[in-house]
Length: 268
Image 1: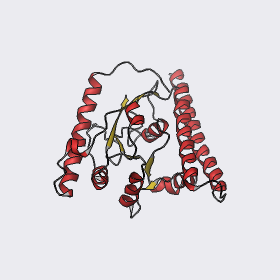
Image 2: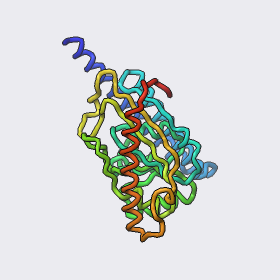
Image 3: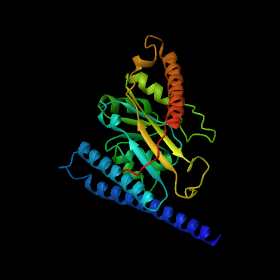
Image 4: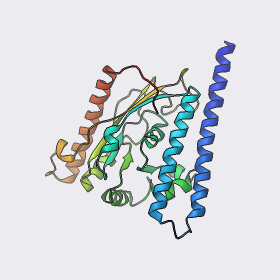
């Protein structure tokens, strides 16, 4: 009993340190690049690439620390995402609190939507602004995203809009479909598995099972609109058709991946 209690204290302390270092690192990066912003010899586009690379390295360091302390395990199979042509939408299911961190850890250059709390945070606000991310409460979200896709950027979105419910039922909102149809953008699906379920909606940040949950990220083949919907239909029908297709796609993939799951190995 006492040993279990000590392990829990160690787990909470380790998690607290990881989250603190992650937030503190974001603050330092934000301050550093804010100081560089007035310098004329570093163009804004170059600075954005540098910040996104820094975010990628910060996320990678965070998950490695989490793994070192036995808080999580993970394996990645995302070559199709890395090799896909630019200007696509990356979508993923959303089982846990750290899904976006895992995805940014495996992709050096990716735009994403951020919540207003992150946009306004003293720790992360400067970083997400200078990285060219998009606030999800902006009035011109769709035009901003469309401009980035047309410029060859890849955008990450979680179509569920929030973490997957306890019953694991996938329910997508239409944001990803609206964006894909509006710009005729290809979609790169990434399937995230977390076993046992942890850091789900309603869980505390330190509520982690012994040994840590095992995460698997798997990118699939790029999907074009012509592959899955009738693009001659009016746009509202295309939105509904694509949303329904993607929901069914993820339900099938999660069942298939669960049936064929192999023992996980830690890979960075």
